Length: 222
View 1 (cartoon, rainbow, N blue to C red):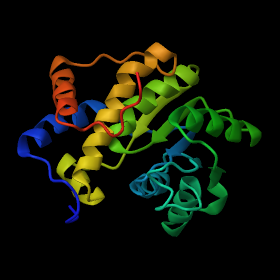
View 2: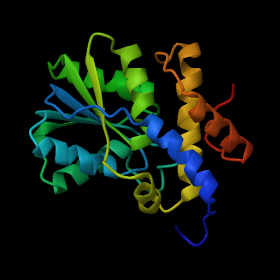
View 3: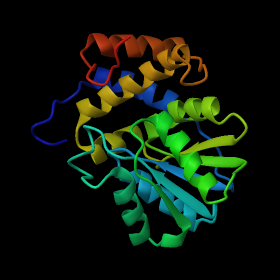
């Protein structure tokens, strides 16, 4: 953790880990037609996409994402562009990567990536979404809503919660993100953005208590 960042308590960490575990889909890795790397502040998405490509799980990889307030300083030329460059450095052939540089949210990630694939004559039946660990469930729910005829699977870097906190270096930001993603899992089906996902009682209790503790910077207006 950087010295200028707020520390979290052990109890808050325990409650956050319940939510972290809920967000993970635990999908088995197996070959798919294409993979889509969802842009974010976490370059680990591009790193893991490269690992999976080199494992032979898919022939085509799309990176999607423009910028957000969280990523504009880190990836000034856009998330997808920086992710593509990183994957190429890690051995993914440039010709295997398609670029979608405009999406600003998960729904656009899915929709715009699908359009880029179609423009290249690719209409996949199976899709692997590569994303941040705590974004798996929301990404899955969004893709199932927007792309119901495709088999959707999710993957992320295989990190323990404590390791992820350390890798990002800002514990409060990670908890804010966990809470924000869970709110979207709960609320977005009501807005028609995603499919319903059941939330276990202990996860719901942890979520509500962490909101009371002030981890609210990534919540959307009801």
